[in-house]
Length: 127
Image 1 (cartoon, helix red, strand yellow):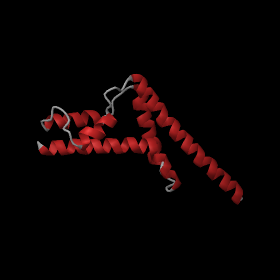
Image 2 (cartoon, one colour):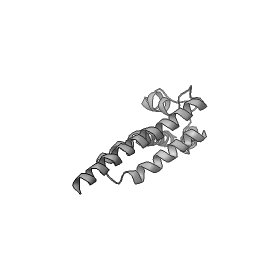
Image 3 (cartoon, rainbow, N blue to C red):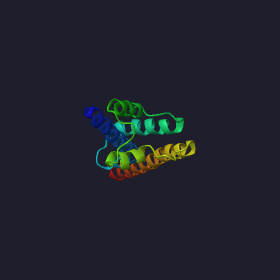
Image 4 (cartoon, helix red, strand yellow):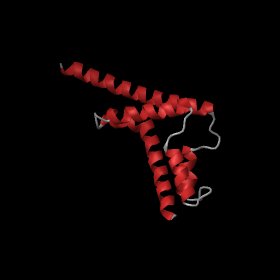
């Protein structure tokens, strides 16, 4: 039973890391030019999940693991208190989901646009 709880917590951390990567991972383009091949699909997926109102497959997996682990509710640990409330806010409405989805896309389009403009200028200067 304890292993299910640990795996459920691991799923939450992976889920949270994915969300952070989808929102802010575009910054990594300054250090790793190939990050868009990983990051763009993450932005697309997270934007689509939010805009379509669907549920990420990690959520049912986590719930299944918690049920198998005998947890009816989240414990008062770090995962239950901080990570879960960030991923699953109690007052999340459809309108909030739409705003979040658009923010993910807007932040990353702006970031990629800036990086591409800077690189384009650098190429023109070097020619």
